[in-house]
Amino acid sequence: MMTNEETTASPVIEGNNKVLMERRGHVAIITINRPEARNAVNGDVAQGIEAAIDQLEADDDLWVGVLTGARTEKGWIFSAGADLKAMSTDPGAMMTEKGGFAGFVARERTKPVIAAVDGPALAGGTEIVLACDMVVASETAVFGVPEVLRNLVAAGGGLFRLPRVLPRNVAMELVLTGRLDFPAERAHHFGWVNALTEEADALDGAVQLAEQVTKAAPLAVRESRKIVLESALADEETGWRLSNEGIAKMFGAEDFGEGLTAFFEKRDPVWKGR
Image (cartoon, rainbow, N blue to C red; front, side):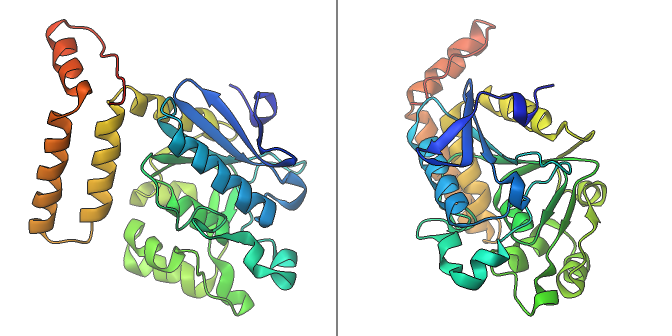
């Protein structure tokens, strides 16, 4: 197992070490690196995550992202959400024009991102997880949106995304009570968390899942992701239209021929992403 402390990650933005990035093959590992502040989001974190997603989107050799949090002296934590001290002085600093809160929750992107959650993901931390496409969490991970306890509203997507991944009444319980102890095991039961791991293994589990995704054709992955998201709340007519448009794009791609050739030759395809 490789922990965050053993990686070869480097700052995404020169002079700003609050978000680190490491490349493993076609996978980009993005780490929120404010352990002294429980990986809470401030301006540096928001700018760093946005820059990391910019790099992920722009690099043809990167196909999947994994987003995680650095280990603190007191143990694992994904993110405690918004830095309340920063919020009290300059709440806009933790927002970016492209990504909204944390430079991520409202970000338009084409490539999948998997959350690797060890320890708590609270408030905005939960909303960052909800903005990811899949979730791998350790058995010690917990979620919560406690904004109502501070006379705030979970404005980073939690109020409409939670009812999409959890039953309505369960989501309502989290939102209205502000409880901080919704366990990953229960989230896994309802299908929000894709896979459970032992403590400290969430990153390895997320990388393994990402590597499974990289075995598929990257263009088909991105188009399929797009169709799933755009058709989730749409009618069947829209779903059929999007699906037909998607398959037409794949027929015209160079990787379409490679997929067929590899099948007939009984070998793994070598995708070019075009």
